[in-house]
Length: 74
Image 1: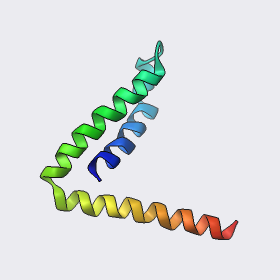
Image 2: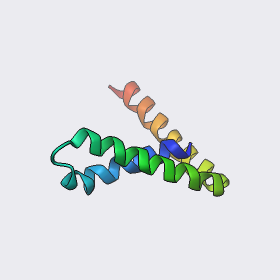
Image 3: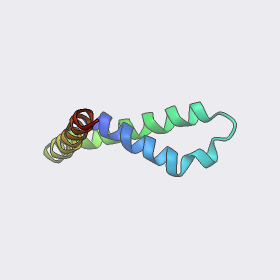
Image 4: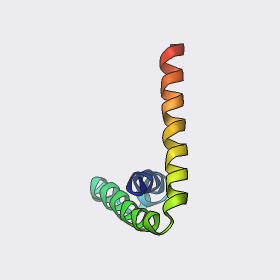
């Protein structure tokens, strides 16, 4: 759960900040940023296990809710 949240955070960080620093090889920049954030947040989620479960469940539930509601309405 922590690595999944870290991957999302890494993707957001790359899209907002780190794309400026990886002009020569943007694919490598994406993978390094996502992997680094995933590892850091995974380690932090082991320390703060209960909070990580709450945040991960909320994000996953919101995603499923929006995915189902858009597939039904369209």
